[in-house]
Structure formats: C-alpha cells, structure tokens
Length: 98
Image (cartoon, rainbow, N blue to C red; front, side, top):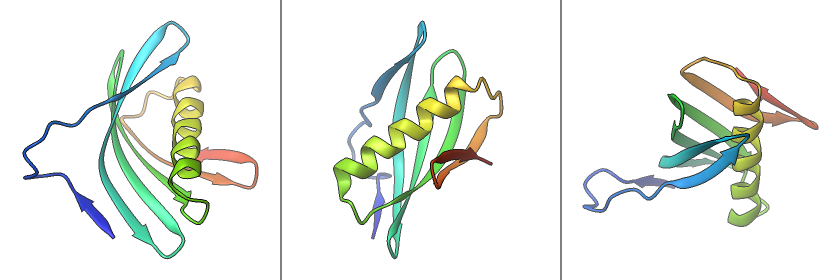
C-alpha cells in the first residue's frame, strides 16, 4: 500500500516535536508498506531542514509504528547529526541512522 499525497488538494499538517529548546515540524509525505515493514518519508523542519526515511515494523499497528517513528526521529535529531537526509531504523534495541 502506498499513500500518495500529491494532487490530493490538501495541505500537509506537521507534527511538532520539541527537542531541547527547539521545536521541529515533521511532515509525512510518503508511506510504503513492504511485507511487515513501513517505509515512511518525512521532511523535518526546525533550526534547519532535512529529510528522513524511517523503516518500522507495521505488525504492531499504526499507533506503535507512529511512536517508533517519533522515537527514531528524536534520537537522530538529538545526535546533532548535520546530514540533510537519514535512513532510520531500529536494530535490536539501538536506533541506527545511515
């Protein structure tokens, strides 16, 4: 399943998240399901703008996947990684950005 947002005629609503003294807006613009995984494409705008793709397990449902995505994004932004794009996934108990 792939959700296409282009051409829907609606504006994307960001999810604001606070990290330290900064507020970041997370915009989801693509979701693709491949077997038991979701690949979620995001634009993240705060003190700088960057992109991230997160791979999460979809078998636990949307709520669990959403919590995991926010956890991965927060951990990545807390690392002060200045790259403009990251691939985020969890391996065991560790989040990994590539």
